[in-house]
Structures are given as C-alpha cells and as structure tokens.
Length: 116
Image (cartoon, helix red, strand yellow):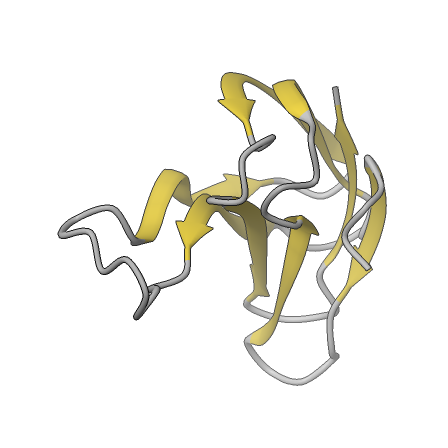
C-alpha cells in the first residue's frame, strides 16, 4: 500500500474514533515539500498527528536514529477545513516512513491527504 500521493482516510465511528495509516513507505523515493490535509467530515473537528518513523534495526542499532519524530501532534482541523503544511522530507533512502493518525472526539474522522 502506501505508494500513492493521494489518500482518503476514514476511521471508525465509535466514541473517540482513531485511525493510523502509513502515507509513504520508507524508501518509496518521494521528496515531500508540502502536504494538504482536508477535513471532509462535515460536522466535527479532527485531531491530526503527522510524523516520520524509522523502525529499530537489530542489524545496525544506531543509538537515537530510530523511533517517531513528529511534524505536529494534536493539530485540530475544524470540519470542512483544509490545512496546508510546508516541509522538506526525502524518503528515498530506506529509513523513514511518513505516518498520520486521526482522532475524532465524536463522529467518524475523514481526511483527504495530498502529498506534494
């Protein structure tokens, strides 16, 4: 999966529904300069976490070079609103993947993502 620049992400409909998804696999050979997040759920705000993550390798356990590194955490995007975030991330090496987590206090979180 996670080989496209376009994602329609929808979570469950339970109270405090959450969904986590890999947007770009490590080594997918994308240079990310901007990301657009559109809350397409028409009623409720959604909380968004966006991070890069490098999985721990037992072959080369480099101290401090693995784990999650957040661009933002707990960013609230109101219903029917878009957020454009500029960043400079190159995942051409097989190190970091790009991940997103959506949380809605009520309703179903639904966010469209475009990676530029």
